[in-house]
Amino acid sequence: MRRELACAARSLRRRPAAAFLGWSIPEALPAALSGLAIARAVDDGFLAGEPLTGLAWLGALLAACGIGALGARQVYRRLGELVEPFRDQLVRHVVGGALRRGSAGHPEDGAVARLTHQVEIVRDTYAGIIVVLRGFVVTVLGALAGLASLAPGILLLVVPPFLLGLGLFAVTLNLAAARQRAYVESDERLSVVAGRVIAGARDIAGCGGQDHARALTAGPIARQAAAERALAKVAALRTLCFAVGGWGPLLALLLGGPWLAGQGLTTGAILGGLTYVLTGLQPALGALVHGLGGGGLRFVVTLARILDTSAAAPTPPRSTPESDGYAVSLRGLTFRYGPHSEPVLRDLTLDLPEGEYLAVVGASGAGKSTLAGLLCGMLEPQHGTVTRLPAGMRVLIPQEAYVFSDTVRANLCYLRPDAIDAELLTAARAVGAADLVARLGGLTGHVTPAELSAGERQLLALTRAYLAGAPLVVLDEATCHLDPVAERHAEAAFAARGGTLVVIAHRMSSALRARRVLVLDGSTAVAGTHDTLVATSPLYRELLGHWHAGADQTQPAS
Image 1: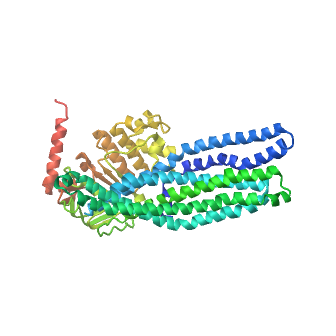
Image 2: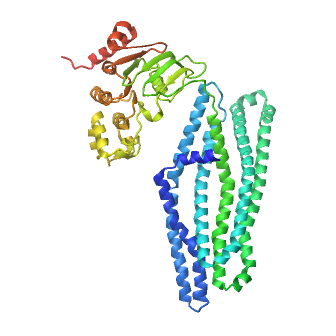
Image 3: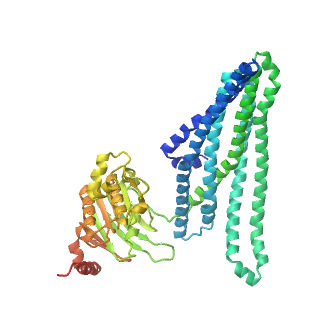
């Protein structure tokens, strides 16, 4: 369970979580004031012949409920900011695991069920857990604080059975988790079998295989039904726990009424205690038992299933040690997409010393973007080794640059949250994005991705990467939507910045600016300077010739 909770905690964003908790405080006010207001209304108001005083106390309780409703409204408005990032994290995890298994030649039958069904279960139950735990803590603390201020003696009667019921519920969680796990596994298996039968429905009907199809699905259906019945028995145990912890305090308070009266407690104080039990402790425990006992178990077990299955995806043996400095090396590297496909890169050996400026050229499909993914840890080789930098020391900018709806500042400092405005503006000027930033309204201007061109999105992404300060920058056709002048400006900025620069070239002009060039043709690789490759590589000469021809055609006629 610790792993599942840690996975959920990693998706929490500090600011939405703080706002969520902050707005929970006003919601505790009705729980803390309810019994006290009832007691004062009875003792100091109605029984004392002062109905206006009694009504005033009830009005105060009504006002507290209004404040609590405002807090609850704000809490639910911020719930999505906590839940949706967690769902996105799970989708990436499931898809990544399925792709790894598929690339390694292993079937991934349960991926669809995990993506379309189990991820949604985890998302919904995660939201439910947040709401239930917050409500339980807020209500119980408010009720206990109110009881302590009203009549501490009542605590001696209601707290022990309340804690007993809570403890019994905690004891049943392990059994319930095992039953829930069996249900999830049976559900996944039934989804796989049913999908295969439905996909072959036409052949089954044409060949008269209905009996065989029924036999295939009968076992999984029976196992899922048995798992459902086992869950129902656990639900009965939860009901018993609630009876002890929810109704036990009420029974103890009623039976102890004469003793409380003998201790000098007033009628209003006893009614106030009943109010705290009936409107505070009992509903809070009921919500916790049914929320965690149902949705909570589904959350933990389903999430564990997702993490176990995706993480267990077999990967080929490999060794990817990290570099001591920021040099990168590839030794005997081979990579293919799928076990039966031809290698995209075959037996590639390459050294990128510190401060290297390398351009990678080749025809479409020659493996240029694959090499970028291998350098930055997005892909793993089937054979050979990649000695790469830690994640925080490398930046990959793909062809389709990512920006999001927020301020310009938030987009630029995404990889450097501590960057000051002067650094942001300096980075924008360096890569040629200063005019764009000004047009968007400066650093406080709003970025709407759909309103930006592909080139403008690339300028923002380039500025973000420049600001990150990573020793290794890989531009995977990251300037393809810029004009040649803007492309030259951006590449020159990264080259002058220091560190290692790898440019997956969109135009051959990038190769002319680099200190070294790697030529890929889908089966072999040749590296060298521009002059060396012109003399030794027919493919490089051919690429260079095509580029010169295209450049000549774009020149105006004389």
